[in-house]
Image 1 (cartoon, rainbow, N blue to C red):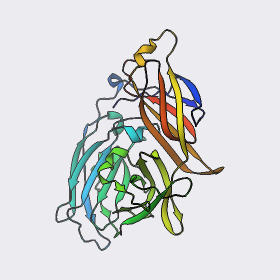
Image 2: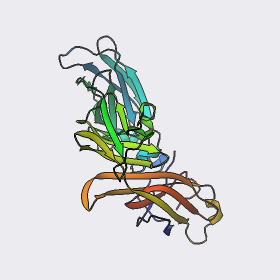
Image 3: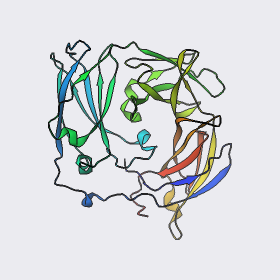
Length: 314
């Protein structure tokens, strides 16, 4: 999915308070014909997965998550489709994954963009490490030891402390590495009537943030905290946001009708104290006048990002 890299910082408003947003200039996007093309596009990742006693772990699932967007904004993690390369360890715990690099910039020595190596095995703690592509270009093995792990039970509550039932919950940050929303969608847990959900392969030591989604609380990314000795996701207070998306002077405003946008709020302040980042978001369509309404947007700084912007070169 192609993203518009221009977005505008506005103040968060809740409870039907309208505002307007003008298209602004963001960071430059490098065109495809400007990319370096002499770097290798095919790379191989390989290694061995063992337990703490150096016994091989067969049938472990090994995945390379390859970024398809360069220069992430916060919201990109919830809307882009990552490129995946998968393998399974053999009886010796060995794996090998050949994969293509979608953007040659990922293979440059100075690239700050990481691939993710994610390893899962039944009854073991999920391992996630960030890898710079050049490391794989020098034939460097990736050998990992997995630790035993009991499934994590966590509780989801709203800002008033009430249990949230029927919410989908999945890992958002593991061992400090942000995980794209769509990568973990098939492994999402669901909270019961007490707000409890079980996530196999994780414990409090490695699971830092979770995505929580439901019709009542919208879409949120929140940190895990410990409350009464229990891993807990405390959701943001949310409200309705209305506004309009403005084009530059002399642009055809009617061309906005039906365009998709993502409305998202971002904050690190809760109860006047700085803390881990929190985010909420909604995918919406603009009407013919560029207006939109987004429910269940959390308190914080609000951003608007236009999707599929090929017709808007500014």
